Image (cartoon, rainbow, N blue to C red; front, side, top):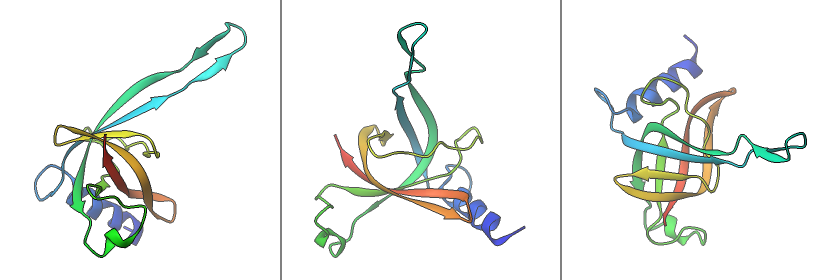
Length: 129
């Protein structure tokens, strides 16, 4: 097993909901705009999709609030790269929403953990509302 696969497996284990995991359930809500079909004159493929995953919420430290882009009440959410059913989690995008602890939060900024092209998770800056 390569080092990158081990990193991904460790992330999945630590951010998961099951045994040994510190994560909590998180629902990623993605809205797709779809594409215009000139034959029918309609937008096709548009819709809202929910993905049942898991993540870990961390508060920002006082030192991190010195960054102008971080507002009081924001927090970091580390998203697991796999869903609860075992499928790969789609990559979140800025503007997507996440339901975590029965509250809806918006992705303000994000940073992907990629080890040589292997998705190992995402660190998201979340804001309520």
